[in-house]
Length: 493
Image 1 (cartoon, rainbow, N blue to C red):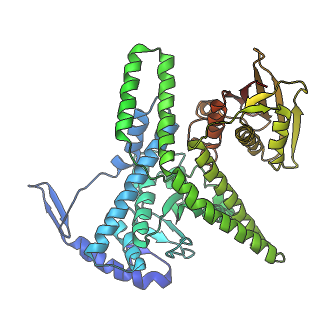
Image 2: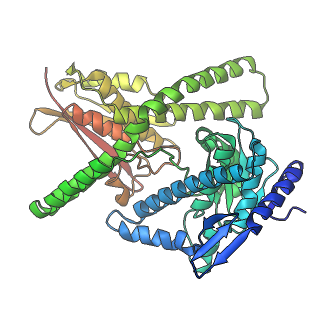
Image 3: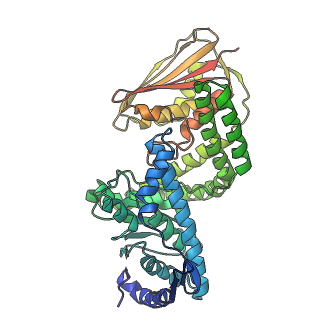
């Protein structure tokens, strides 16, 4: 009888077989406190308290990063826990498959949830709509009714605003990734520590995760209200640059004794940007080249399907539109990623501000619910910039403003001479919801975003391109009233 995992009926025979040999594996256990050893199936194991890898770990990391704030500390804790658990899951799966002589991908996978239960991580309840196929269509939706992480939080009387079962997500996706030879991630979309009825996860290839979540939320509108503050792991493969970071830290420590507190703060911000851009740079070329071609093929395929299925039912049309929107989002993320780490030297020339703005607006589809107001004096001095790079800066700022007003509003674009008459200030103002004060200082940091479907690179591109053209960018915002981004550019004929 299958009692260590719950699966759809068609998978029960496979998992019953897995239950037998996993139980045999864990039955060969030896403990010798006189030597401080625990062995299972001839290999050394250790016991670790659940709380030390859940809420206590979060509290420690948040304490270490007090200066950066609680949100940044939680982000770092999540990244560490996911990556550690993902790596452990892959290695445990590899070791178990070798010891038990497993070769078939589904047989390898079936051992995972049973092993998960025996090792004390959680019980796994896999939903019938799951489709664990060994390709890009892989999709798994499942609950962990007794997750060690959520139970540790709740046992300590702790509540959370975000899902906390990070290691459960990392370990399970690591095991399945190793079983299928397919890059996979898992995201907890509901969690008991938030007051949700279950700890629910979705597992898929990274490129399809947001699409699966959106489809599930549409399918389950009542549950969608509870799916808040979930986080899709930004699973960049981190290759350490230890010597470079050590040298930068030494330089920063020396400057602490020589410079003012203001300079120290500036250097710390530079360190954070450099570290993040270093990580991005290591994967930018691979991500860009590997994703752009398949995204183009997918986009053409959707266009073809929309053409030949013009009389399709509403559901088919709706899902084709969802796919098209996801492809557009993915293409923008790839472009932002490449632009953020591969900024080219500008080729400056004299450019008329009004023409620059008109061309940028023409490239952006403005919703009918948004009114655009232009205020650019005819006699304003031309700016000396790279026109292509400035088009991208203004396009990103216009896009940012439009996305801040999903229900419509007023987008004001203005320009005026700077106080010294050697600069021109171009402002893009929206009437959206505004930006929280605690977020404003982080807007130009790589990978910082308040939007669930972004990776936080658009404003990094704005800052990089503006500064390399000899300009600067600043933001003012008020909650409930909107934001204004102002770019200062050098004049020149």
